Each structure stands twice: as structure tokens, then as C-alpha cells.
Amino acid sequence: MGSCDLCGREAALQQAEIEGVELSVCSSCVRHGKQKAPAPQSFVPRKQHAAQEAPVERLVDNFSLLLRRAREKKQMTQDVFAAFLQERSSTVAKWELGDLQPDIAVARKLERKLGVSLVETEESVSAVPEKKRAAKDELTLGDFFKVKRK
Ligand SMILES: [Zn+2]
Image (cartoon, rainbow, N blue to C red; front, side):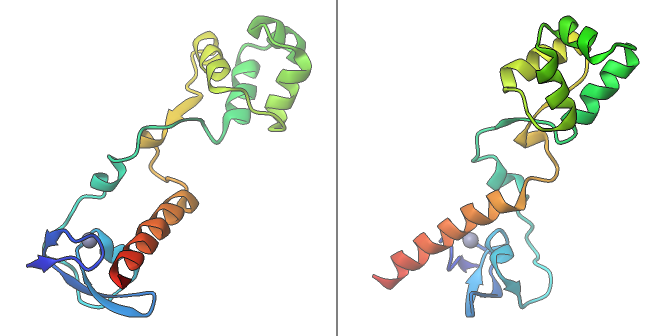
């Protein structure tokens, strides 16, 4: 046991190479870099990190496809479908093409009308966009190094 060089948490430590520096880090921080030592004995569930983030609602990735399928199931033309959804047919056409995405509030309304799930929360998403995570992690790392240099 000792304190993690990155987050300061008391935990079982592992050697990892992070940005060219060899550090003793906990099992959550080890993913910032290349792990040196073999698998950790203590496993910290990933959701500890995820739990700190508020759930974010977003449109499902295949919204366009789901919308078109829902329409085809009802055997409606885009015009009829648009009227059914109380939207403009040009808007619905763009949704189906993926040129336009509705607001979450609108997507929620479509969900109710169609009985199809069109909105998901980040929590329930298995593949959280890597870009978002990377940006957050870099910030944490950067803040840490600033603190260390003092
Ligand atoms: Zn740590």
C-alpha cells in the first residue's frame, strides 16, 4: 500500500509509465499509461469514475435508421409520417437522412408517439466516446503535474 502518484488515493500500487515518467499509481490511474507490472491484485470498478459524471441524455447513434424503420413499419409516406409526428415533412426527411437531429425534447416526443427508444443516457451507453474521456483524463493529469511541480 501507498499513495497513488496521480490521484493520491491510498491503494495497492502498480508501476506504470505515464508520459515517459515511471510512477506508482493505483489501479484506476494505471490506464493513463502503459502498465509495467502484471495484473493488479485489487480491482477498482470503472464505474467509480463514471459515477462522478452526471448522466447526459443524447440521441441514439442510429436515430435516422430507427426513425425510418418506425415509419416503414407504419407504412406511411414521409408526408403522412410528418403529419403524424406534427413536424414539417422537410424536417422529417432531414432526420431520416441524418442531416438534422432533433432536440432531446423533440426526440422524447417522437419516442412516445412511436414507442421506440431514441434517447439514451451516457450512463447506459457501453461505449462512451473515447474523445470525451481522453479530454477529461488529460485535464486530471495536467492538474496533477502542476501541483507536483510546486
Ligand atoms: Zn490513482
